[in-house]
Amino acid sequence: MTRLRALLLCLLLPVAGGLSCASPVEPLPNELRPVEIGTAFTLRPGETVLIRGTGTLLNFGGIDEDSRCPSGPLIQCVWAGNARARFWVAPTMGDALNFTLNSFVEPRVRVLGSLAIELREVTPAAGLEPPAPSAYRVVMLVSRIP
Image (cartoon, rainbow, N blue to C red; front, side, top):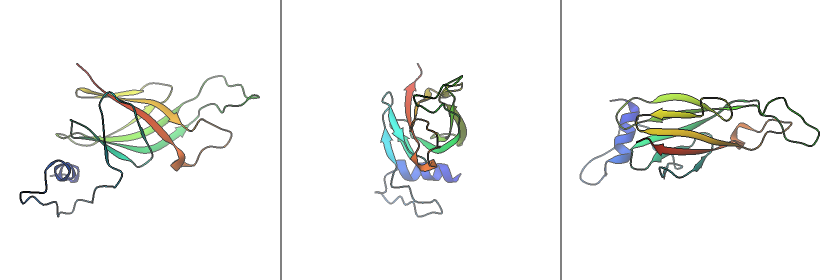
């Protein structure tokens, strides 16, 4: 059993009834929270959420590249630029998958089975100085595909 599957079992199975998660699996982070399908939510770097009703974990690893145009009255850019965000997702039945999504260029959405994971926004806005890696936030939306 992979560490991720063991983590999911510890998360999804009740501890009552003699089940125990005393194993080499690392403890769940305090930030783990459920998010709703169809409702936008914000993630900070390193944060993992549980997509409610799916048993799927989604983690925002950080921003790998940020070439967005800084805002300002004297600044003119040829194009808006792009921020590339790094994620991993761990479905209940399957292996973890690493992927990137972009703020401006494709891909902006990753389809995983019947779920579409979309990067909606990257904050803070670009400035003359790049933000600290920990200052980034992404707004995500997970939708069901019929």
